[in-house]
Image (tube, rainbow, N blue to C red; front, side, top):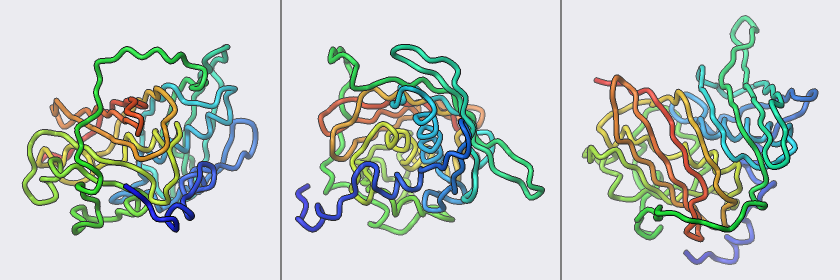
Length: 286
């Protein structure tokens, strides 16, 4: 969509945006970082898992000799809340093209004891050093033009509790995956949307970690309601995204035993598959 000169003038840049400020950490000692988790990235009553993954991803980028996440696997142990947190990182291995590290995020209980919220194992490299050879059968998702899609501002909030994260996103959902918002879920377990940051900041590998977990859950289109907490999330970053909005497609093929998977693909404005993910999540039945 064309933008006015005034809109372009206030566009945030990578390194100087709300996302960057809210994922910034203070290094207390080698491998130890302090952060105040922002309430601006909450949904219902918990801090969004993609935002948390970006926080840990930034800590590992500072710890490891390589700057770009290639694969990040996170186990979400307990729900994180806005407020003080500590991230501890360890270098597992360093190599010429890949380095591997682990990180954990801790908060404090009412007695002042540390509680581990998330544990991550990740490998980092240099995305700009990857070869250009691409052989794929994957195709970008078929999403209507951005101006024909709908965001949270286009209707009443269908989820009880905080939805502060939606104020920080440019999220425009494919109308064919919006049946849940009208009380008529399709039953297909699909969610597709245009995705960006509300202040216009372009995307980088860290914001891709947010993008894979920022859409409404596919469980809504399966006719389920309420929080869908992530148990485990693995993200593969495939290349550095081009400027412009992303297209995100998420599908669920199997809900069983109160758990479902969400497979996500993230495509950039140059029609490149820039990130993939799979997560296992719990759902509330009945």
